[in-house]
Image 1 (cartoon, helix red, strand yellow):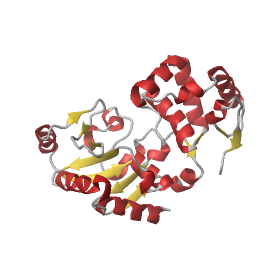
Image 2 (cartoon, helix red, strand yellow):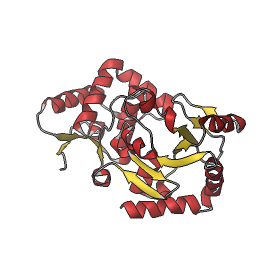
Image 3 (cartoon, helix red, strand yellow):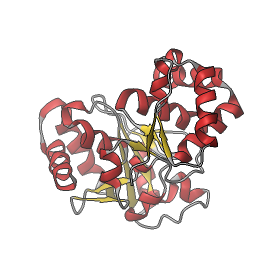
Length: 257
């Protein structure tokens, strides 16, 4: 799967279709300021669904030759700073965000020492996002067993500290409903605690505010919470399927080894 995904990413980067030539020229300009890596969601979704199934954002991290020069360039082109220290580029066809390596959240808050492009694999919340494509060497880098867990649709935590518990809990539900993932034990615990901390209504409001969708409206919340509590009380390492509660029943499967 790794070599096939590398070919798909190289195709995406070289194809002139669907505005990708604009992406290519944007990245060529960025590479004047440092070494670039594509990270996370795009790589995950192309691995699962192919280029035709990918319509979301492109997230990059840059290891800048000079941080001040890079940030001066961002201001010059009208890039908008996002709340997690990165920049949203003014590009119409595809949403492109880029973070300086030194400003990644996990590094800035002392959870992971991120000194090189490869270290980025340690700083993502979800394991399925712990994948990078090094544009300089045209190679993927992943955590151990990455493709095995992705193929099995296991959604689990990579680094628990994060700046947006509400948003990541919402993403956990969306990944289950839209992409077919089931939750590992640590993620199940995290979501249960987040719901108790902020409430189910706050989670629904967060989903609509961020995505303008209402998948959480289809969930039987009391049954879900009872199912989660029962799930977490067992000593077995089970996967939890929140999508089952859209149908009013619980489904648990043995955790794949």
